[in-house]
Length: 386
Image 1 (cartoon, rainbow, N blue to C red):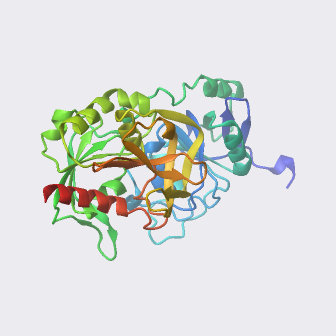
Image 2: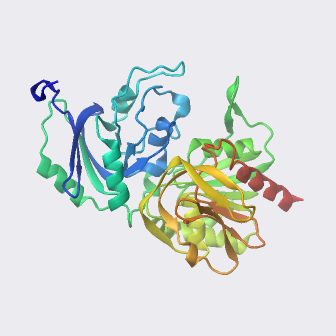
């Protein structure tokens, strides 16, 4: 095909360093500015786009077949997409799954999310790995008219995720009950009718599948907003407290979350379990520090070693900040580490049922490698009641 016969680009991705990537737009039109990351998962693009932990980020998918199974309401991790945009190698093809309800392009357009296809995602991923997660502006214009200087300037003006408390933007507006369990053939999501333990889940951006795993482990789950106080939590007389995943800088969210967690730890003997941002919140409450990672961990192929058992689990991860394992205080030991870079992936308070992990056991790429963590939480509440 000659250069003159090539279709005119209808989308543009501009990085803060001046790099420009042209492609074909789909989904919504307009412009968005965010941090650019990449995700190596081969499945689960809808779950990724609706994971509240991706607030403030445009996701580059390294796997080229994105959109090929369409979308459906059952796979949403929250009500609407939270990721700011999508970057893919190949334009989505016609959905080929019996579960499809709506093609990915229509799904994104209906939810105001911009996507670009036809991008050299290998080159883009190498740049992110080498230089760190850049700030980027993504624009989609069906006529192909772009102000490149303005897009680069917008990317450079983006404040970045450091210092940003995004949990307040994705948390629930009010308290609610959750009883839906994990999907199972042939009935799908069945309700939990024989719950044994009352759990308060603090919502920093909770994924629905985490709540389903808690329900499947025998928990009667009450979800509270991220700003919940110690008194708010104790008013529900819980048997355990769960700290959810979420986006943004843990130090910023910790300004209001850490005092609450410290009160729970100081005044009660309740089991406490945290995932992702909840892991970081617990670590901060115990006196550790968090750091911004170069390009973070985003994917479903991350090997994590359990230091207590020597077992290696294949896990799903999504985080741009990490707990500094060297900053853990006495009485708190490192239970899990990443075998990719040795970064901290889990902690536990010695002699107490208080622990957390950085990875996502509910995503189950193993597929069941890490589900024992929910069962451990349930068992800890049963032991306390005995």
